[in-house]
View 1 (spheres, rainbow, N blue to C red):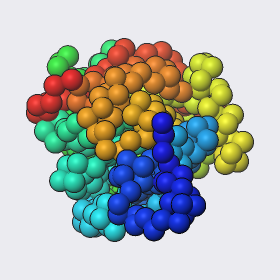
View 2: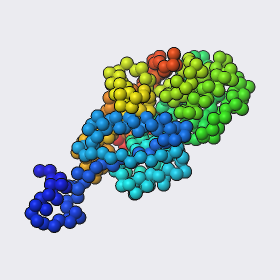
View 3: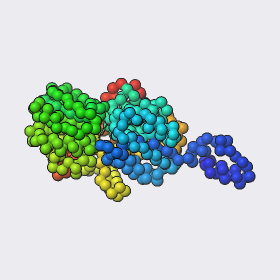
View 4: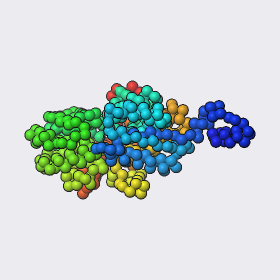
Length: 396
Ligand code: PHB
């Protein structure tokens, strides 16, 4: 028999009893209360568009499940993390201790997510990461309660090393913002490229989220590499791609990137992005039924085209639906919840994904080229790519 809190209270009052809430069985209370999700995303700044997709995709998945997890209604609490790592621990703590959220969800920026990981570990709160690729989250800081539905920064970058080498490039300059995501993405490219005999001859970093690239573009021109690999995303990616073309470099030194460079940005980049090669675990035009349905549903719900960030958010929602479904919404059944989530295979718009022992997706990385304002899939750059999860001690 299932006893809901309302039933107990009604029965209590019908029988003329005074029944203090504290004397109710905890399970009964837990099962009728809403499941709260604390959403930390950047809703302002260079990553604002990524944050918007990160919330929309989650909502879409939850709506498809009647806005319920394991039968319990869901409530979302949002917080703008402003892509500011310094405030991340306090923000995550506020959601967990102040708003009493059951699930922490976020974020986009690798530095911010590390603050969330720390706080989630301390409180054994479930954390679902819909973007930020910080290697440590599913590496040295991996934990049973931490899941990522997106990628590690290494994942889309490493396969580009071979793509570049196979195109005949032997020297490269890498460039990015100076923080975890840029350094790890460039590191992944370098590892793939140099393992084959290529050489990264210069590494250029600018402070996040600066977009003054002129001096660096002059440095690149002077270094005369065979190619340039960059990590930029959001508003900064728009600016970099336009500046690279305007500086006249696009014709002489091929620009390569992790696919974030041209994700959700093509309209703003226009002609400057045409022809660019990128590697990523998604492309809008993937000819998969789940992708087509997802894209149509997203457009209908939000009046905009979905991009990768919406996909990852949608998959996060589906992972929560599966996990909480397995424990029938019982937030205290943590071990069972985490086990069910770890075993989940998602029919993602990007193609099927499973989770590694460190709770990071195992996924194909596509090679894409911008053609007529679209990221067109040229093929699979590397199949079933799993992050090496260096430093993660957790067993499946
Ligand atoms: C990150 O900081 O991990 C990050 C940010 C934006 C992206 C990808 C990764 O598009």
